[in-house]
Picture 1: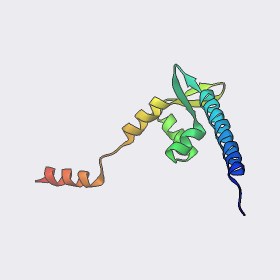
Picture 2: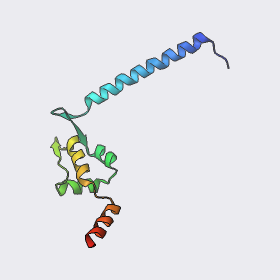
Picture 3: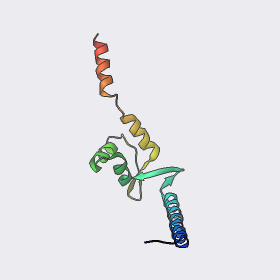
Picture 4: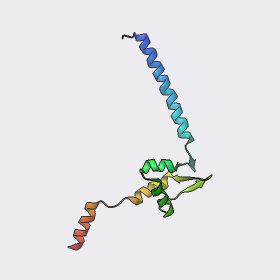
Length: 107
């Protein structure tokens, strides 16, 4: 199947038009994201996907006060900066470093 140059250019133009439409749609979706004081808010579903945890684990982090949250119209939201701080606080010393520290302390 051969196509001539004009037909090819027409197809490419249509494809580029679709990319422009998609770009506009993405920009609209980003603008609609929930923000408070210029900071992005995430809902439970966002966090479950981001952290790859169960809803019960997320509930436990809230109950223990490890992860601050906000309730707006009965829906739970988390500030992105709070989530980043939670992740930083959750980092643990790698296992090899723990073993080396125990060995050096025992000497």
